[in-house]
Image: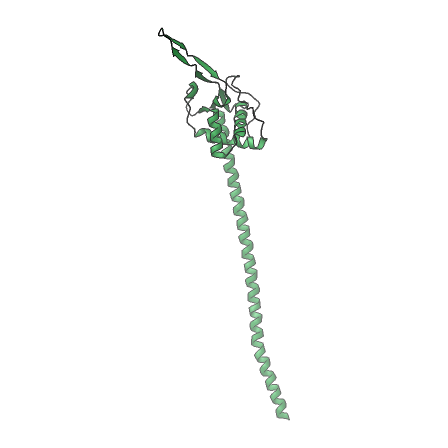
Length: 212
Protein backbone atom coordinates (compact mmCIF):
# COMPACT_ATOMS: atom_id res chain seq x y z
CA UNK A 1 0.00 0.00 0.00
CA UNK A 2 1.68 3.31 -1.03
CA UNK A 3 1.90 6.14 1.51
CA UNK A 4 -0.74 8.87 1.22
CA UNK A 5 -0.22 11.89 -0.95
CA UNK A 6 1.25 14.72 1.11
CA UNK A 7 0.53 17.82 -0.91
CA UNK A 8 -2.95 18.83 0.22
CA UNK A 9 -2.26 20.81 3.42
CA UNK A 10 -4.98 19.97 5.93
CA UNK A 11 -3.82 21.50 9.24
CA UNK A 12 -6.77 23.09 11.03
CA UNK A 13 -4.81 26.26 11.80
CA UNK A 14 -2.53 27.38 8.94
CA UNK A 15 -0.14 28.73 11.57
CA UNK A 16 0.18 25.26 13.10
CA UNK A 17 2.85 24.15 10.66
CA UNK A 18 4.39 20.77 11.43
CA UNK A 19 7.31 21.13 9.01
CA UNK A 20 10.48 20.13 10.90
CA UNK A 21 13.64 22.21 10.84
CA UNK A 22 15.76 19.08 10.32
CA UNK A 23 16.90 17.99 6.84
CA UNK A 24 14.42 15.71 5.11
CA UNK A 25 15.53 12.06 5.43
CA UNK A 26 15.29 9.66 2.45
CA UNK A 27 11.72 8.98 1.32
CA UNK A 28 11.74 5.20 1.98
CA UNK A 29 12.42 5.56 5.70
CA UNK A 30 9.94 8.43 6.05
CA UNK A 31 7.28 6.31 4.35
CA UNK A 32 8.09 3.38 6.67
CA UNK A 33 7.50 5.65 9.68
CA UNK A 34 4.27 6.96 8.12
CA UNK A 35 2.92 3.41 7.96
CA UNK A 36 3.67 2.95 11.66
CA UNK A 37 1.93 6.14 12.80
CA UNK A 38 -1.64 4.75 12.96
CA UNK A 39 -0.46 1.63 14.82
CA UNK A 40 1.23 3.77 17.45
CA UNK A 41 -1.43 6.47 17.66
CA UNK A 42 -4.25 3.96 18.15
CA UNK A 43 -2.61 2.75 21.39
CA UNK A 44 -1.92 6.20 22.86
CA UNK A 45 -4.04 7.98 25.43
CA UNK A 46 -5.59 11.34 24.55
CA UNK A 47 -3.73 14.26 26.07
CA UNK A 48 -5.38 16.88 28.23
CA UNK A 49 -2.32 19.14 28.18
CA UNK A 50 -2.24 22.59 26.59
CA UNK A 51 -6.03 22.89 26.51
CA UNK A 52 -6.38 20.02 24.08
CA UNK A 53 -10.02 19.60 22.97
CA UNK A 54 -11.94 16.38 23.49
CA UNK A 55 -11.69 14.39 20.24
CA UNK A 56 -14.73 12.63 18.74
CA UNK A 57 -15.25 8.98 19.72
CA UNK A 58 -12.70 6.73 18.06
CA UNK A 59 -10.22 9.53 17.44
CA UNK A 60 -6.98 10.49 19.17
CA UNK A 61 -5.26 13.77 20.03
CA UNK A 62 -1.69 13.75 21.34
CA UNK A 63 1.35 15.99 21.57
CA UNK A 64 3.71 15.89 18.61
CA UNK A 65 6.75 15.13 20.78
CA UNK A 66 5.01 12.21 22.49
CA UNK A 67 4.05 10.67 19.17
CA UNK A 68 7.65 11.11 18.00
CA UNK A 69 8.89 9.42 21.17
CA UNK A 70 6.48 6.49 20.79
CA UNK A 71 7.55 5.94 17.18
CA UNK A 72 11.13 5.78 18.37
CA UNK A 73 10.43 3.52 21.34
CA UNK A 74 8.25 1.03 19.47
CA UNK A 75 9.71 0.99 15.97
CA UNK A 76 13.15 2.61 16.37
CA UNK A 77 12.40 5.53 14.07
CA UNK A 78 14.70 8.49 14.56
CA UNK A 79 13.44 11.89 15.67
CA UNK A 80 13.84 13.55 12.27
CA UNK A 81 12.22 10.61 10.45
CA UNK A 82 9.26 10.60 12.83
CA UNK A 83 8.73 14.36 12.61
CA UNK A 84 8.78 14.27 8.82
CA UNK A 85 6.38 11.31 8.78
CA UNK A 86 3.91 13.24 10.95
CA UNK A 87 4.33 16.34 8.80
CA UNK A 88 3.54 14.45 5.60
CA UNK A 89 0.46 12.87 7.13
CA UNK A 90 -0.74 16.29 8.25
CA UNK A 91 -0.15 17.71 4.79
CA UNK A 92 -2.03 14.78 3.28
CA UNK A 93 -5.09 15.28 5.49
CA UNK A 94 -4.57 12.06 7.46
CA UNK A 95 -3.65 13.95 10.64
CA UNK A 96 -4.67 17.38 11.91
CA UNK A 97 -2.47 19.85 13.75
CA UNK A 98 -3.48 22.53 16.25
CA UNK A 99 -1.52 25.15 18.11
CA UNK A 100 -1.22 24.35 21.79
CA UNK A 101 -2.17 26.94 24.37
CA UNK A 102 -0.69 27.64 27.77
CA UNK A 103 -1.20 30.17 30.59
CA UNK A 104 0.73 33.33 31.25
CA UNK A 105 1.99 33.62 34.81
CA UNK A 106 -0.31 35.55 37.13
CA UNK A 107 0.20 37.16 40.49
CA UNK A 108 -1.88 38.68 43.24
CA UNK A 109 -1.19 42.38 43.71
CA UNK A 110 -1.13 44.21 47.02
CA UNK A 111 -4.60 45.55 46.42
CA UNK A 112 -5.92 41.99 46.10
CA UNK A 113 -6.40 41.87 42.33
CA UNK A 114 -4.92 39.30 40.03
CA UNK A 115 -2.54 40.54 37.38
CA UNK A 116 -1.32 38.74 34.27
CA UNK A 117 -2.79 35.42 33.39
CA UNK A 118 -4.54 34.65 30.17
CA UNK A 119 -3.53 32.25 27.48
CA UNK A 120 -0.91 32.29 24.79
CA UNK A 121 -0.15 30.03 21.83
CA UNK A 122 2.88 27.75 22.08
CA UNK A 123 5.11 27.95 19.02
CA UNK A 124 7.30 24.93 19.81
CA UNK A 125 6.87 22.11 17.27
CA UNK A 126 6.94 19.43 19.94
CA UNK A 127 3.88 21.00 21.59
CA UNK A 128 1.68 20.82 18.49
CA UNK A 129 -1.55 18.98 19.14
CA UNK A 130 -1.79 16.16 16.59
CA UNK A 131 -5.24 14.69 15.99
CA UNK A 132 -6.30 11.64 14.01
CA UNK A 133 -8.93 11.54 11.28
CA UNK A 134 -11.19 8.78 10.02
CA UNK A 135 -9.20 8.87 6.81
CA UNK A 136 -6.11 7.75 8.76
CA UNK A 137 -7.90 4.68 10.16
CA UNK A 138 -9.30 3.78 6.74
CA UNK A 139 -5.80 3.94 5.27
CA UNK A 140 -4.52 1.77 8.12
CA UNK A 141 -7.18 -0.90 7.51
CA UNK A 142 -6.44 -0.91 3.79
CA UNK A 143 -2.74 -1.38 4.52
CA UNK A 144 -3.33 -4.26 6.92
CA UNK A 145 -5.77 -5.97 4.55
CA UNK A 146 -3.26 -5.68 1.71
CA UNK A 147 -0.52 -6.99 3.96
CA UNK A 148 -2.66 -9.95 5.07
CA UNK A 149 -3.40 -10.82 1.46
CA UNK A 150 0.29 -10.57 0.56
CA UNK A 151 1.19 -12.79 3.52
CA UNK A 152 -1.44 -15.31 2.48
CA UNK A 153 -0.07 -15.39 -1.06
CA UNK A 154 3.48 -15.76 0.26
CA UNK A 155 2.34 -18.61 2.50
CA UNK A 156 0.66 -20.40 -0.40
CA UNK A 157 3.76 -19.93 -2.55
CA UNK A 158 5.88 -21.36 0.28
CA UNK A 159 3.62 -24.40 0.61
CA UNK A 160 3.75 -24.99 -3.15
CA UNK A 161 7.54 -24.74 -3.15
CA UNK A 162 7.72 -27.08 -0.16
CA UNK A 163 5.44 -29.62 -1.86
CA UNK A 164 7.57 -29.46 -5.03
CA UNK A 165 10.71 -30.04 -2.99
CA UNK A 166 9.13 -33.01 -1.23
CA UNK A 167 8.01 -34.51 -4.55
CA UNK A 168 11.51 -34.12 -5.97
CA UNK A 169 13.01 -35.78 -2.90
CA UNK A 170 10.53 -38.66 -3.07
CA UNK A 171 11.34 -39.18 -6.75
CA UNK A 172 15.06 -39.16 -5.97
CA UNK A 173 14.63 -41.72 -3.20
CA UNK A 174 12.48 -43.85 -5.50
CA UNK A 175 15.16 -43.78 -8.20
CA UNK A 176 17.83 -44.67 -5.68
CA UNK A 177 15.66 -47.47 -4.32
CA UNK A 178 15.03 -48.83 -7.80
CA UNK A 179 18.74 -48.62 -8.62
CA UNK A 180 19.58 -50.40 -5.38
CA UNK A 181 17.06 -53.16 -6.11
CA UNK A 182 18.52 -53.73 -9.60
CA UNK A 183 22.03 -53.82 -8.17
CA UNK A 184 20.99 -56.33 -5.53
CA UNK A 185 19.37 -58.56 -8.15
CA UNK A 186 22.54 -58.44 -10.24
CA UNK A 187 24.68 -59.23 -7.23
CA UNK A 188 22.48 -62.18 -6.35
CA UNK A 189 22.67 -63.51 -9.90
CA UNK A 190 26.44 -63.19 -9.89
CA UNK A 191 26.78 -64.76 -6.46
CA UNK A 192 24.57 -67.68 -7.50
CA UNK A 193 26.44 -68.10 -10.80
CA UNK A 194 30.00 -68.06 -9.43
CA UNK A 195 29.66 -71.30 -7.32
CA UNK A 196 28.02 -73.01 -10.29
CA UNK A 197 30.86 -72.02 -12.58
CA UNK A 198 33.41 -73.13 -9.99
CA UNK A 199 31.70 -76.53 -9.66
CA UNK A 200 31.66 -76.99 -13.44
CA UNK A 201 35.35 -76.14 -13.62
CA UNK A 202 36.13 -78.61 -10.83
CA UNK A 203 34.23 -81.43 -12.55
CA UNK A 204 35.96 -80.64 -15.84
CA UNK A 205 39.40 -80.89 -14.24
CA UNK A 206 38.45 -84.14 -12.54
CA UNK A 207 37.37 -85.62 -15.89
CA UNK A 208 40.61 -84.59 -17.54
CA UNK A 209 42.58 -86.25 -14.74
CA UNK A 210 40.59 -89.48 -15.06
CA UNK A 211 41.26 -89.67 -18.79
CA UNK A 212 44.96 -89.58 -18.10
